[in-house]
Image (cartoon, rainbow, N blue to C red; front, side):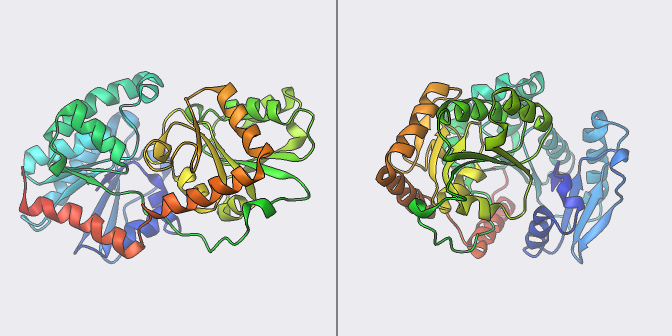
Length: 373
């Protein structure tokens, strides 16, 4: 496995625990993680058969060469004919996987966790534009592709003419919350209705738009509070923005929290303002938790949640639409209740147990041993 997720370095993290579960499916799992020397991590074992290797390059520019070098060392040692390479993305890690596939003739799977054909992904940075071109080249040269959502699979088929038989649709493994019994109409904290945002505080998430929207809908009202759960490089900027908008006393910046289920449980409306999402885990969790969802047209809002049925969906960046939809929910309690109930129904259709998920994950890799391209 070629990965960029440095949460694997923390054995107590959810990501590391998931890697151990993946390792239980195979004789051995070898994970090469992009990292630089400043991360101060050395190779280690997550479990008796799950091994983590750190690239430890001098800079990010050394990731691909360093990971390729480590991959070669591993592939010289493992049992030939029963080995598969899987990469976290069809970008930099995909390049490493493709180079190793060419050198060792080992089946290769590339995973896609983002909506790479979204124009917002392409336009968000020069690096992402380059990544899209890389993906167009690499995806045509892999043996299997795993995506987290049907819409992404459809885009790959339409734009790259890749056969559907090469693509596995498998959502992200979700750690289930305890049963949430609080009906949406009974939710409130200190007499206030919470509008909740759960997000990394980065530019593509457009949390600044969420602040503008809240300032508009909360004007003249004392019964609303905006709760933002998440952290990122824009935290200070967003706090200053809330102050300038005159809503800082109505906004709670919680940082990143492990007990996020409690925030969903007390939320009346879940607001998502992202420009693009691969899956949209926060949408998934808020739907499961029975929130009334107002969101941009991203992630599972595109092909799982029904607009007007289980969520209210607006074009990306449409401040007026999002504001209007929030007011519609606030002014129509029975409508909010209907959205909440239907969201829970819709999300059950794509919810897998851990056992089902792990079986499908393993099957998606094992098939490549029998049907290499």
